[in-house]
Image (tube, rainbow, N blue to C red; front, side, top):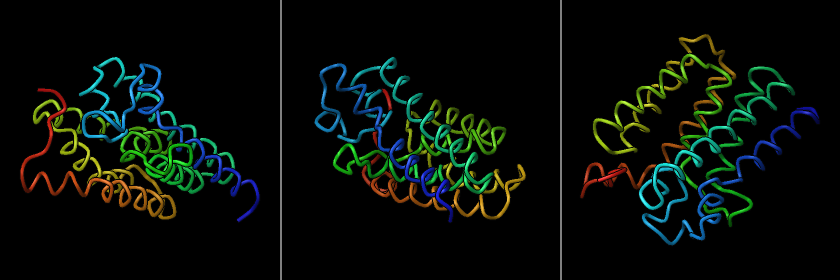
Length: 194
């Protein structure tokens, strides 16, 4: 790996570490770790602070993935975009700036896909939105999009090195949803809005 690629990956991790749920909540005098589910993500911001704050959180977290993938693409082409996108997702999940206590990485992974395979990303966002609207459970939409992400990207022409980095991002985001998966099959998952 050459120096520009290493720098792009480090920058992607740093960008991913800027957790917009934390930033938006702090701007409103709220510690996101102390309210709702305690998860620094869009769903918890929506439940505790409303749609405007949630929209800002989601937009910021998506842009992290887009910017990281763009940096990686500049350094190494398509596989570099996917690698940097993965590092941004790692940064979101384990943020350097927030004591390594981050969110689940869905929006940042979506941003990575928007840069690399925009048609697939838009289709996945539509799947997510429809499922969340119907079920009122964000994790159902997120998990469905995760299952479809790599096949959609493959169909959209992504090559193997990029697909492997995307698969790594999907695996990490799925792992971060282990509690949600347990609740879906157990006591019941939280709804995004009552």
